Length: 439
Image (tube, rainbow, N blue to C red; front, side, top):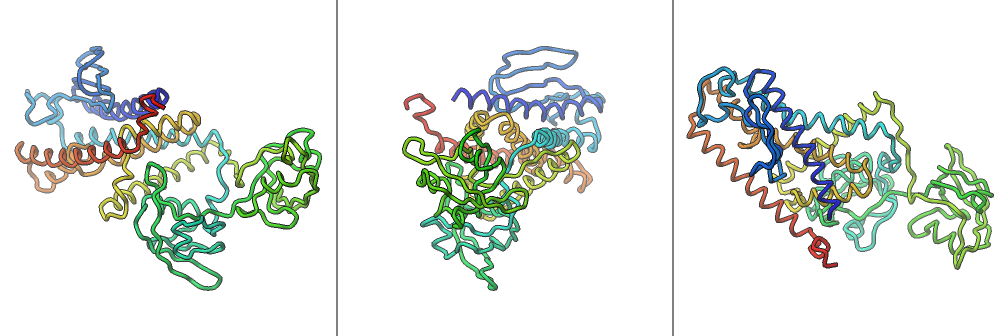
């Protein structure tokens, strides 16, 4: 629990600071007087005044704000040039857009740094979605999907890799989808309703790729080392029998202590056959290796490649965000998948326990979400203010304070309904016994 709170505070603090800093810097650049720069809402716990600005840390750490002179129509205004509403629409637009822009830029920079560190990722993510195994009693099995089927389209969307398949199915839990397969020389169409998996209601068909174990490490002096097995070798068969979920490699080795086995190994594109005899350790046979259940590929990009990969990753995430938003409007995506502050805290704590790479990747994803969602034309959000200015520009007149208040109220109601939904979702996901220390 403490890890989740600390990680959440760190992630949210960075995102809010960057967002508000965008508004602040642009306001100062075009000559707007900034009255308050606050991290958090509510009562001010710490205030430092520099020039005309109060820099504050407030009690409720779920956001922040920049208060500018003459920002609202009902503020007391002197008509001075350093007030927000004294600036042109173009200048006000620049101030409003810079908060979301900074969050999007943060996502891009953080992911470039993360990717530059290098990582091992599943090789199957970029492979064609050929079904390697169908889970028992899964939606895929019930709809007639078979091992060896190539999945072509899901819900009318082409899928060329396993990663695209997962991204397409994930937001559509408990929503019937049309799945088009290639089976031999024929195209087959089936209807599948993905199951909702995990507390975040992630859609799952119940199919997995063809996965073959890969050697990560070989223990010196153990049977694998003596036989010539090396790290990065991929095991495809034992005694001529392909490795599958029904014929798992580890169980085969464990059951054949002191029995010579012929392993079919792929190394650097070449296929080799290596004889190894598992040694009896306790009650099982072991060959002395550390395994990954699937083949991995190592990413070690240079600076320019890391920047390109960050752009591609954020572009893909942006597509998923818009896909989810569209799915909410068309009922393809369940509102149960929405996550609020408590859900983000849970995710942050889990990522922090995995390591800094996972935590900063999560930060980049949330920052991108924050940037894009703030650009939506919903009153109260930055995008809503921009939308109102655009309407005023098209009508060539400024709306009255009364009309703006009604628009803002409508936006507030929408946001309130959204907050109620995400908080309810968060509360239903929490293991209260664990959070309260009962078990």
